[in-house]
Length: 370
Image (tube, rainbow, N blue to C red; front, side, top):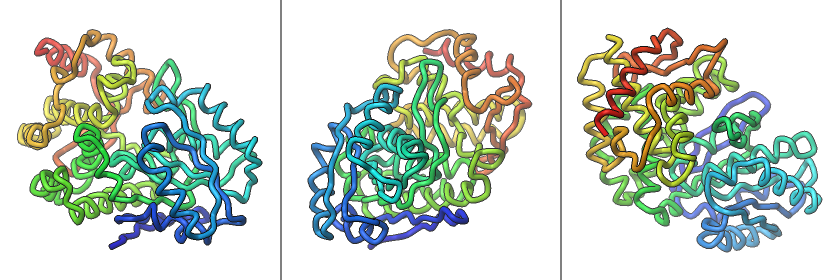
């Protein structure tokens, strides 16, 4: 069973295919888009060991030749050094404007490869084949590409929409439970920001998702992609509504910077902690009832996820340092932090009207509980 979500950006339309066995069908799905029967694939060492040959066979079944660049796994690959390596490799492979570059991997590979495609020959097409749940529901959709800077996450990049997204549900079976749950942090975010019924469905179906239920996984990825596509079509370059997708991310990005963008805190884990903090902040500002942050925390805890600052191993800086790290976030406008807060589950909104002392006090209390 394959589901399809259409992203209807005028002149840059593309489909997101969701279902099992899509790597094996990749040649049939990508082939009609190719000017010539060859592609360059960028991936990482972990994904290559698991999925590269399946992709090669799927492309070969349609007569498509493949060359691959295998990069180190991890957030540190989203850097100037690996961007340069990727671009120079693609040039050495004589990639032309009408060719397609394929990103096979999680969010790191998708962001890096998409950015390389955006700047190569002033823009070549690319295909996203996301291999993590987080990438399938978030980073592979919507055209945000980029790398990290020492000053913050995703501060260098471009909007460059993919030509096609293939979300193969089968590859999720190779994820560790921790990596799957990190991706679930982005899934549940969609319910929190704009669909209370989806959040309620996840409360019931979350354990089945984690346990590997194929139909539930397809349904969750599809609804997440639908919600992201709807928002991206309204606001492609994040002038307004698209910022809603950053629910939890203002806190998350500061925590990721504080923990060195490493394995101490995966991105989706930071999103989950950030969403819990955003709902707590909303409650303290009188925007939502206590029931909302309590319900968010209860569901995340039931799924075995990180919820509070005390769940993050190792030292964290004090509240003032975390606030300074938030100041490097892309959502800063005219020097003011923009927060995504909520009037309830499914009712998120964007605001810059948040007193810093309330945020500082919340962070201070959370750090005191560690």
